[in-house]
Length: 198
Image 1 (cartoon, rainbow, N blue to C red):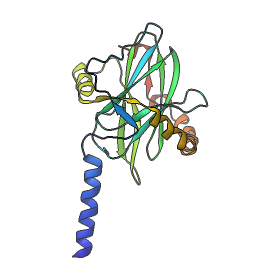
Image 2: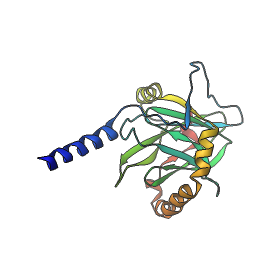
Image 3: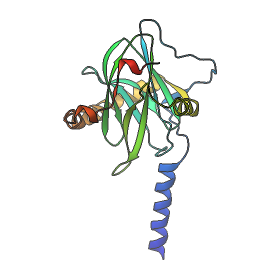
Image 4: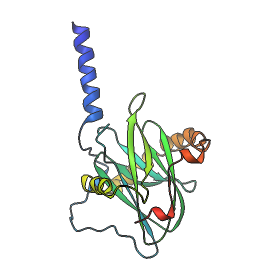
């Protein structure tokens, strides 16, 4: 009976952790100004990374610009949160981390806003994440639902300190998964195309 009770407790805990509700992190700052705008300037693009699902809400997902050798922090994206990343026009590669690493290509045009989803899935020990490219032909009602359902967060000095302290682990995951991702056919690699901007 005690063994059965323990198994039930563990199962309930796992379900709560993965189904949950909105996530929070001490490493990001909630944006409280309702009128804030993340519209791109004329010489830049904006990529909005949003996590509309509450699945795995207790597990954080961190996003990086890995276009170069540097792991440039975009932000930590909790459940029901979104973060804006300003970038010059051009080709990029982004990485999302959880239990593993996954990647996404992007080719950005100036003056446009692009959207990508952070998608949780069950891992061996905790949640894994992948990036989803939101294409121009998406159902606008669905995109609007995601945008309204996710609240803005921004990086702080604490966020960057976290990235510095965890740099070896971040690089280790990048190294461990990049070859596997590169070996996928192009059709299996999420990509934001220039025309996907709004």
